[in-house]
Each structure stands twice: as C-alpha cells, then as structure tokens.
Image 1: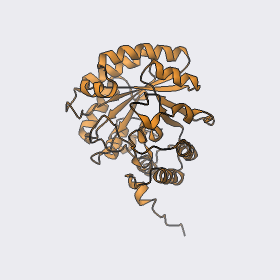
Image 2: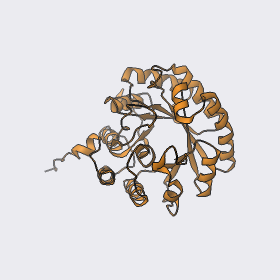
Image 3: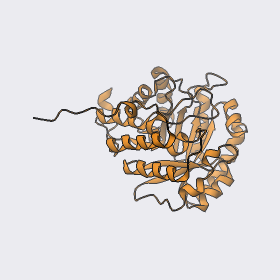
Image 4: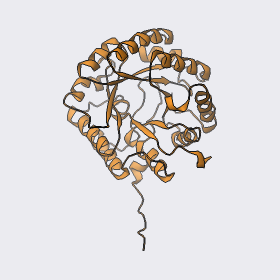
Length: 306
C-alpha cells in the first residue's frame, strides 16, 4: 500500500485558531502574530488565523480583526478564519479575508453545545451564508465534527456525516474537513470512513482533521494517505482541543505529520527545522511544555556521508 501514496500533501495549519481557542490564559496580539509569522517562515501555505465567533463564547479569539489588520499574507499563502454566522462573515469581509471556514457536527447534541442550534438549522444558516460569501468572492471550507464519535452520544452513524458533507458541497463549499473531534478513531474505523467518503465524494474535496487524544492520530493519518487523502489539518506542537468536547486533547502535531511525510518521500513544501522552531515559539508563548512528539524530542542527527 505504501507504494501508492500521494506524491504531495497539503497541510492546513490550525494552531492560531484551533490551537489557541481553548487556552485559559489570554495570548496577546503580538504573540499571535509572531506565531503566524513563524508558521509562514516554515513554509505553511494555508493557515487558519482566528475565528469570528462571539467574544463572549471564545474570549481568546476576540481580537480576530486585529490579528488580520496589517497582516497581509505573502504571495502563495492563504489565510482563513472560522465564521459561524452572517455577523462573523461581515467581520471577515471588513478585513478583506478571502477564505472562511464554517463548522457543524454530525452529532445533534454536540452541535447544540457548539452552536446552540440543531444540525438542520445550522445547514439552513450555512446555505445562506455560503451563498453570501461566494457572491463576495470568498471561498468557503467546511468542518464536519464528531465523524468518528461524539463525547455525548457515542458512535455516530457515518452516513449521517456523509449526508451533511454532501449538502455542504452542494451549497458551494470547496472542501470538507472530516473531524475525529475527540480522538477515538482507530485505523480500521478510519479506513472504513475514508473509503466511504472517497467513493461517494472523491479525495480531492476532502481533508482529515485528527486529534491525538488516544495516541492514534498519526496512525489514522497514514491510513488516510493509503486511501488517497492529500489534505490534513494539523497544529504546531500538537496544541489545541475543542472547548465543547470534554477530554479532547490536542490536534495532530504538524511536526509529527511532516516528519512522517518526509520519511515517506512525500512533498509538503515545509522546512522541518523551521517548523520545529515554530513549535518552540508556541511553547514560549504558552509558557508550558507542549505534547507534540517531534516538538519534545527534536530532530534526529543524521550521519554525514563520508
């Protein structure tokens, strides 16, 4: 199976948003910008920089406009931000953002906890929101959460997640990110999910968003690669977690994913030593050890050729 892996993978970096949103101690604006700049310096081309949600619900990201003010992405780099409603879209448009992300859950209970509305109501809201964004020449990406399991309901029927993803594509979303929000996925389950979605939608419009709560994120990513997936969400040094998913530990660490991909000969466009340094920037900002394995161990020494 390893002989049929994709030659190149796109990494969608979520640490400035998904990585920081659950931090109890406020992170100042200068530190957020420093983190973003270090990620750009490592070669990341797709970065979710913040979230236009209500500051009352996620105070850590209340400065979304300030993060994007004067922060013009270099050529070839695309910024995005989470937008749950039309007010969020207006805020995104006010700073000239050209891509947003929307999110909902395949689990009804988790969707109510996260968005305070039903999944069906969320789809109604997003149908209108996506139309408004596309009219303004703004691309829309979508997250479908709890595909592998819900912290409140347990196992979620995978066909429910598939139906939601198909509707979001019909609205005009260019890519669907499938989330193992609480990190319960095993390689066999991941293979079943990836094969179903790949056969019904096609891997070119899909991404995987994996959490490492139980140490299986990298194994699940490898299964995704074997199924042809070419886009993976990740967070530098493994920071992050969903505030409405009890027990959800950090995301798949960008360094860990990149290290594996480099070892498999898969191109990412990322300079791994610079990425490791970006993880150190994150650790200095958050003032604590971070969970990423490569972040903790560093890069191995390579024997010099004689």
